Image (cartoon, rainbow, N blue to C red; front, top):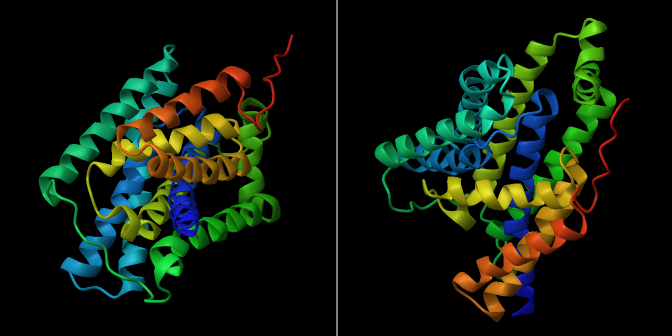
Length: 285
């Protein structure tokens, strides 16, 4: 039983962590919390199932097409929900604009895909029991993604430009960095990460339009716990959340497990408002 809780907890936590990284990637270059992160992960599962099961594409082709479509939707989000808000004095309106896009995505998915959970194909048919691929695949995808992001940010010029924009976009623009292009690229990258989350967790969560709202919340919790913009904190927070959630499911079950997650979330934020791994925001005077 303990091994099942750990396996399912790490798998769900890896998906939540990737959604948290999706939030952070969009936030880093725009300072906007886009509530389409969970929808991008939901579409990763829906598109993956559609391409591989319904249309019969090979797994690799379905995977690449899924990431491409999620990247395009990430860019569309930047164009229609984020860019107009950045030009406005009331920049907190992103809460409404991105939430509206998220609801539109969810409703279109429900109309086109259906309101019942659909199966997701086995990808590699490797492992059984607690070593089934639905448990280890999200964890592997999470590890590979975070390592690839670390390489991108630390070893490439584009990645360093992302970090410069995230650190101080005014100074970065003064140095001639193309802020708008980098923001578009970051939203495309966020779409890819969200697509990876949904595709790798497809067997665990199934292809279901309602996963978007669920992942929006459970993906935001690691961001809040780990510190906004801190990908490593989001990974640790996501895995911890997954383990706690599955343990709560086993101990109390049903809706009470969600209550336990909410309670943990509130207690941690009361103790550390900047997140467990976040630092206090410095203000220039």
